[in-house]
Length: 150
Image (tube, rainbow, N blue to C red; front, side):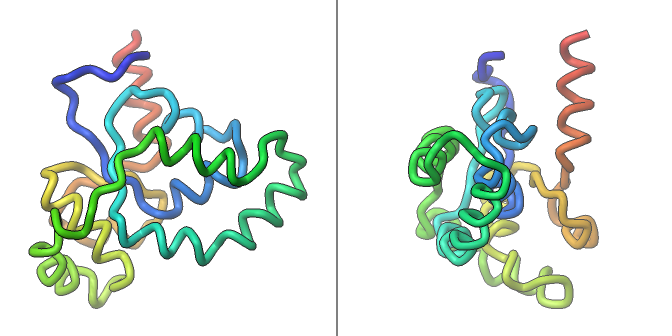
C-alpha cells in the first residue's frame, strides 16, 4: 500500500520501534516499512532506543534474525521521520505535566504528537490514561487498515 498525501501520520512510541528492531518480520516492522502512513519519532527517543540495543541484539540472536542489527536499524530509521527537538520543544512542558503521574519519560513522544496534531501508536496501556491525543494500538491500526481494504 502506498502512503497517501492526505493521510495524517502517527507518532510511534519507543516500544513500537523496539519491537520492529527485535524481529524483522514482526507486524510492527511490516507496518513501519509499508508506507501506509507517515510515522514520526522524536529525536530524543533515539537515546532510549540506544539504551535497549543490548536487549534487542540478544532477542534477535535468540530468534535467528537474518539481517544484522545495524542494517535493520537503518531500514527502520529510513522508514520513519525522526523529528528534531527544536520542532516540538515548546510542547515538552505541557506534555511533561500531562505525563508526570503516568510515565514522564514518554513526554517527548506526547509532545511530538501534540505538535504534529497526530495520534500516537503505542501498545503501552499507560498512554491510554492521557487525553491530549488519540492513541492507537497495533491491533487497532490493523483493524483500520482492514476496513479500508474491504
